[in-house]
Length: 70
Image 1 (cartoon, rainbow, N blue to C red):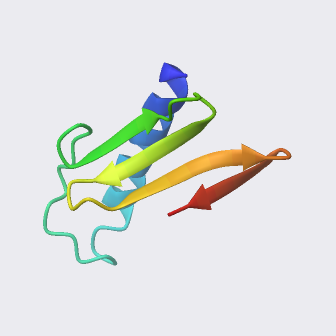
Image 2 (cartoon, one colour):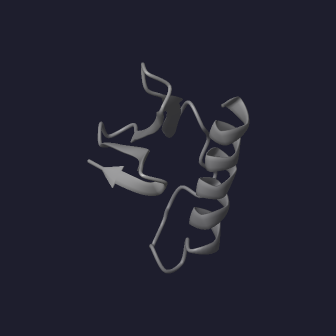
């Protein structure tokens, strides 16, 4: 699961860097653990992402389909 968390972290940073002008980002040196968190839920069947503003999303699976929940 650490591999999944690392992949989501890298993909998030890469995606935000590619779209920094489109999204009008001021801070383009985002760091996991400081600007956002990626972690497993207690049952270890979903990934929780959150930013330092407090907003969180959960990414899990249902019948083989990825589901994003706020």
